[in-house]
Length: 170
Image 1: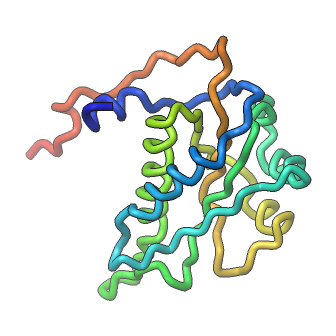
Image 2 (image 1 turned 135 degrees about the horizontal axis):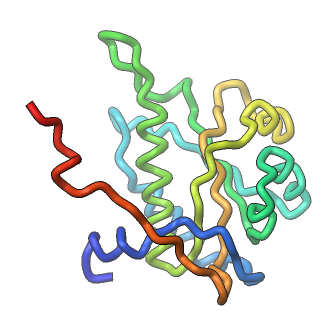
């Protein structure tokens, strides 16, 4: 990648994976990028749980879309609300914002390495917390199925707003 724009254009949600497992080198590189993500007051409230092979059926109970079962690896991105920054004036918890930044660092780094990902947020968080025995201060925010894209994976056409539509008009 020569520019961030090119990397952003390369990143997309993959819902069809090859059988090849992610390498330790690729995962380490990706997590190094996550480690560098900015957060409110630098509190870094993220924790990631790598789902063990013996736990694959547990995560698949929490999100039952058929394509999800084809991933070779899964991470659960969790926010530690005990350490996330809360704005003094109104108590707003910035943990979700911090998690969004960290997970997007994950996805962009994965794209750079040719690793396929897809944000999954429409899962049963209560069941996830129970099945993985997460402590009360950790909220599962996103599932990250990952691997390498299948040879016959076809990227969906993307639609994005035009730049003019991003501005508040006054």
